[in-house]
Image 1 (spheres, rainbow, N blue to C red):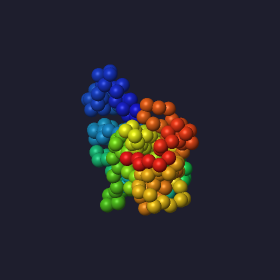
Image 2 (cartoon, helix red, strand yellow):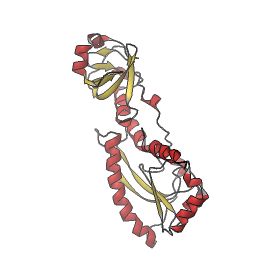
Image 3 (cartoon, helix red, strand yellow):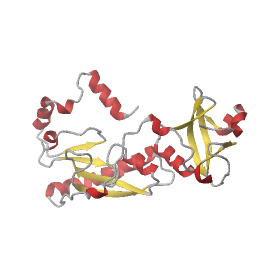
Length: 260
């Protein structure tokens, strides 16, 4: 369940739908006589008529260093790609996705144990400080909006449940990065004994292996490039999650098997 889905469901249940497209809604916003609109974590492209209502336009807080990682999942993609730095960008919205001129950025280190929720939280904190710093400077004309270098733009996409399926041909680090990125949803999962097995917690293991990819050796799984992933907590379909030690005690044949 995602926040945007919840907002959309609430809108539809009240017959609002894409309320921002309705002229009466636009006129209501115009009546506020606001100096500026601020948009955060809203996955719809707003009409230019709405964006241009306030004299200082409509600005957005985006959790990446634009033009990198434009689109709906910048934090997840930074983690997927094993980035060590990211940041937030405040920019003026236009009719294209994360395309408008930049007002300011703040850089943030990605910690080795960061997951999507922890990194989102730290980005929100640093972004609020950046916003408070930028607003008066932008209003007074101290800040001049800077056009993005669109040639350097990289896209992201909406995350689906299928993205969480593990490909054991990937390296242990790539799979662990997927686990970091896809918390709390969709998580990562594989298939064993005809059922889905969700990996609740895992870590990259230092030991190499010559076993085929997807082969288990107690709490280790063989991955691409002879790397191994250490399972810490798992959840078999229809069951509660359990530490891998307890899972192995209850499912001894898992100690040497093949994951799909």
